Length: 166
Image (cartoon, rainbow, N blue to C red; front, top):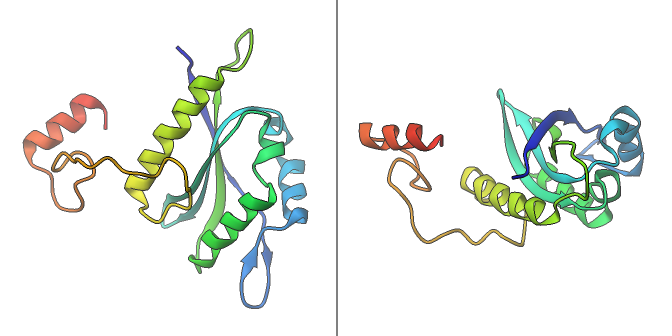
């Protein structure tokens, strides 16, 4: 079994224009200068907006070559710009989820499974998640437990959530 650890959230520097904010190559370089310890690591990452004490996920990705090579690629920056355009307030952040150090090759299959799980979990919190792949939600729900919308869950639903660690 592959164990993963979570690192962050790490603030992403932004260029603040007169009408909007954006992440450019300069901000990417600034980010990696400050967080170089994570540049060569592999795993999954969540780009989100921190506001009001929580983080709203906007994009989930995986890096099988290394975070520095994949996180700020031009097509990813386009996704981030789209996400930033929808939030006037809030701080853009990255969370890294990496396998625990071990001998041998990185488990690409486990990273892929983790990405799928993170996308499904993130889309349950933010239906406007910017991912394209893996966003098809299951067509079932458990009232008060999973994908059931708002409202106070029943006592039985709260017990099941607690029992399953949800």
